Length: 266
Length: 306
Image (cartoon, rainbow over all chains, first blue to last red; front, side):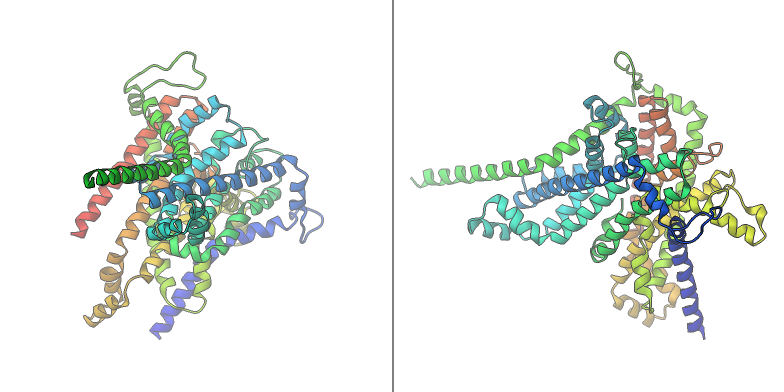
């Protein structure tokens, strides 16, 4: 009897938690696919998604977000892999200083760094540019991804590299043909984290860019809510598109996530 | 001859060594240049700026004003109220996340049917953008046709229907709720992973000593989770205390400043009033509070360990 009660309690609690987690998604998705109650025709519709296609600025924001996130991911993955490989493979003097220094950068409040960075980007002419958004976002994603990459590379025994070099491989080919494939799942996680961080970012993008032309999706959405002409259901439809990549990545990376999640604290 | 050979060998060895180090530095160059230009230099500059009257669009170079910016903060009641709101928000949100995360983790640890699906869905709210999250919740809590207001009206509680995010009584709780909804599941996932890693023998021997479920939790589970818990608490104190987006997009600091937190106060100084020096001083205070908190917490943890 007691066992049944505790089992029932556990399921009730879980049901409440899952409802609280999933209900906001469900209601918003439902609304984005239905006409408003006041409208003549009711029922299922793709109208709100179709309306996005008629708004060049929104389409552009979608494209901007994609460009910035993909570029950011590529640059972060390559520079983090090169650096982490170098530290593990060659252990040059100052290795600990580099690792410690990068970690301490992560401790500094982002908002505080953004004040002079905004000023510097303005002077460099990168303000209101996609390049500026990409470089600024990437710089704040890099410390964590560098550490993550290092923690994966260091699992490879150094002897393996030496063996590969004795076999006649150059330093480059050892990196791309031996080391990278061995840490493929780790590199995948780094790429996932970089893409989602860039794609989801609002703060950095809103500081670096105020132009509508070069705005990324989160910034465009916040502007759309603020503007009078906004139709609430178009906002919901666009928001569904904003949520899609992180959710897809989340489900496809389940296994890696579980293995690495204790270190994913931002 | 032999000596000469040995000397030659050392030189050669050193050269090779030097070459390897040079290679390493070349490979490190992209990452380090990027970080130096975009994070390190601006961070150092921010510290220096906080002692000047730097402003955006200033003619002439900024003046060194010593501690003036900090003295001005000391005298500004809006700063104190923002600090108070930030501290209150953090003190409310993080303990809630710990308790809720722990309870969800404890339930999900039991090998019940259907539990795998729940585990797999737990982070749906954590992976989406904070902007997306606010939009989802604005649909639920909007003043006119928001679902919560509709439900309240349907239940005959029209008096309770309100503009939740702009209600002086509820806005602060709404912001706290956004934080908890986002991050409590993250606590749960990490604490669950920690719990699953605790050796079963520990529980068995404690049970042989006559421990009940409550004592098992208190004397076996929690002590084993202390380092994960420390990491999570520090990380989320930092997140809650420095978060700008959740508050800015949901309430914008309103109504009548009840959700005006330090990050918003800083943002407004820097990008509303262009007072970059003054804003940097706020950031430095935030940093100091966080460093102090982290040191105290780690210190307490060490003492508890012994």
